[in-house]
Image 1 (tube, rainbow, N blue to C red):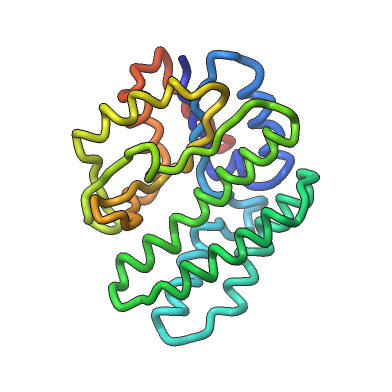
Image 2: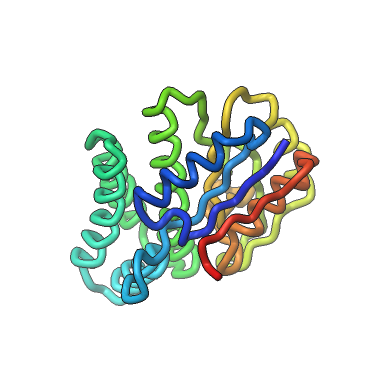
Length: 222
């Protein structure tokens, strides 16, 4: 079995996501796909994670964040449309983001992790939706249901050792599994992110837990 992780540059737009899909489907051993949040489409562009950080900071500072919110939703709406998906996914993303924003920012670090993690989560859901659109058997797997339990060090979470036993059972699920990188959940069920670049951490944890023969870390960055 192969666990493969694709960075933000590889998920930046629909063209890149189609390329990722071709790579995954080219080898039947590629069972687990870990995706990052969409990265820059060009040198002047902004990564989705940075858009989300700007949005979170606006909310913490007492602004409504509407402009920043629309920038985030717009990026995913464009990707979804260009992949030929219907508008239901975008509506779900909009509602989910609003739910996250309404969760309260009394604990700034916890709030920021909940907002930042949306980039990977939404990208994984879009990638899963695209595979399903192509009639490929695939499952979106959330860190919460998979059992990726981490410490409550928001922004620098560490995997808890007992997570590995639960994660090792993922290979029982048929088809391709799409897993969002960058975050896990605490024992209390709260989202906590790894350090920046944490999708690499997610991929390596899954490869270790599943005793994968190969862990592939794909990138379009030189």
